[in-house]
Image (spheres, rainbow, N blue to C red):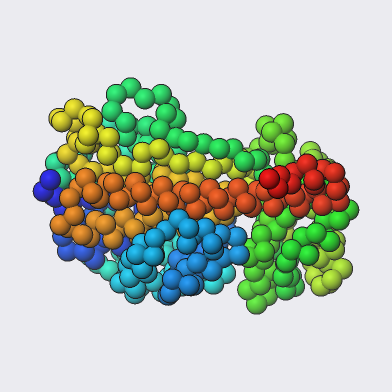
Length: 399
Ligand SMILES: Cc1cc2nc3c(=O)[nH]c(=O)nc-3n(C[C@H](O)[C@H](O)[C@H](O)COP(=O)(O)OP(=O)(O)OC[C@H]3O[C@@H](n4cnc5c(N)ncnc54)[C@H](O)[C@@H]3O)c2cc1C
């Protein structure tokens, strides 16, 4: 299939932007980026995984939870290929990634920085401020165009990648791990967390233990940013608004608030600081999911030949393709974006191979994040029963 060189990237969240920044310098492509939002307003603090800037296979695999799984899932040649691609990435983008993997930063500052980088390069990316519908996306395609859906967890095209009538969610495998509150606060002294700290600071909390993410406590020289999660029930989840503050929590869920207060009280005893401002609370379901088809491969093999998806490859990227809890998704999305950009750059690769290879890569990334998330959830469950040996034993399935 001859390529037209036109790449349509729908959704300029972090993953769509990174893909655009990776494809922009390639002469053979002209990128059209579509985004419905006029401003980047999501201020939540996010963390990116250090493996994104790994400079060796060993450092790529360094992870206390899933280091071994990486070696089990990926072949050595795949790991080498990923590393070679990283080393060939534009230096302006690599510099940003290096910066973000140091600590953690607001999501909208990541989005703005990549967006500004794209504009500052002055290499034509056509930007379109528009809500794109699935019909628009199909109609805009000319044979040989490439379409990338990076519209996030409510993916625009996920259900359209299978020929014929597909029920909503028919192309999605979803596993709900739990419901949680993501609670963030600022603290006026350095505060570092480790596994012991998680235990001792929760020792008087029978339920609603606040579990900070070790790498999500970050002291920026004057303030510590602390983010963690509290497990809640499905009923709690239903009774809460999607985001709220400490005052709302105290009035409506005093038991959760007391648990937070006890945790923070112990932090203060040790380091004599104060919480700055209020708590920021978001309630979310922690879902693991993947698109069973992350490309238009099925249209190529089984669809009518005259449908645009049969002559223009379609890829899902970022949360459109795979979603995971516990603060891993952007890194996973960037990882798939790098792989996809590397594939597209291989102009002599037949489309069929390109689609197959991307499917396989997305599947392997899914396996990795699935194993990692299940392990985190299992560890969390054990942690929450540490003071109750019988409940703990019930959760330990050894053989
Ligand atoms: C509380 C919380 C904390 C988190 N913390 C972390 C963390 O620490 N680390 C981490 O890795 N992840 C974290 N995440 C997850 C992370 O925010 C997402 O994985 C990430 O934003 C996904 O990026 P994306 O580009 O794939 O999709 P999105 O960020 O959802 O971007 C999709 C873009 O597409 C646009 N769009 C959608 N539909 C259309 C359309 N029809 N037409 C045009 N444009 C469209 C949207 O406006 C948006 O800009 C967190 C999530 C939550 C809720």
